[in-house]
Length: 169
Image 1 (spheres, rainbow, N blue to C red):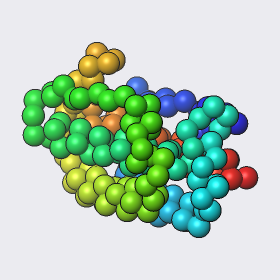
Image 2 (image 1 turned 90 degrees about the horizontal axis):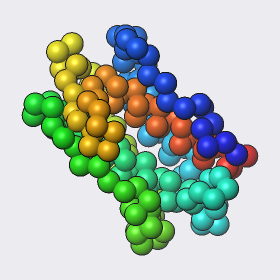
Image 3 (image 1 turned 180 degrees about the horizontal axis):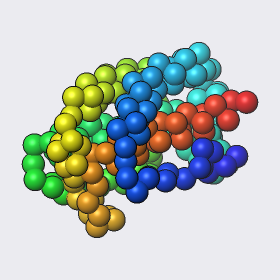
Image 4 (image 1 turned 120 degrees about the vertical axis):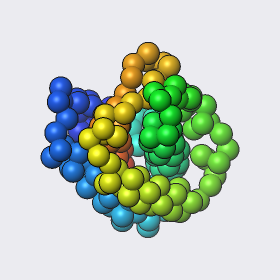
């Protein structure tokens, strides 16, 4: 199975209003689509890797929850501070923690649903000046606009949805 089943993230040079609307739609629909895909999985399915050498499907669902929680925090910091430097985190270290291996996926599915409702509510009401605000990522040493964040996490949603769907077929 491919590492990038929908292709690598490619942000357009200029992010249009249409790009942002599409990203918001993806963020709005993703929680329900993910829930429909995984809600009835058996324990043995949750324990299978989503691709060779990867995390399990359970770990991946918990990863999506934590990753998107960081995105939500980044949105809020960016809207309330001047180009804040965000806190990076080690996603593999998170995935090795006990809760990623034992916690029910419903916890993360519920978390994703609520996070996305809040993210969509915020992003849907941004003006051009707010969309252009950015945060600084210390690992890449780049400033990331909220426009880029919206497209990145829409891609991230579809990317991992495809991983799980492909693993189950």
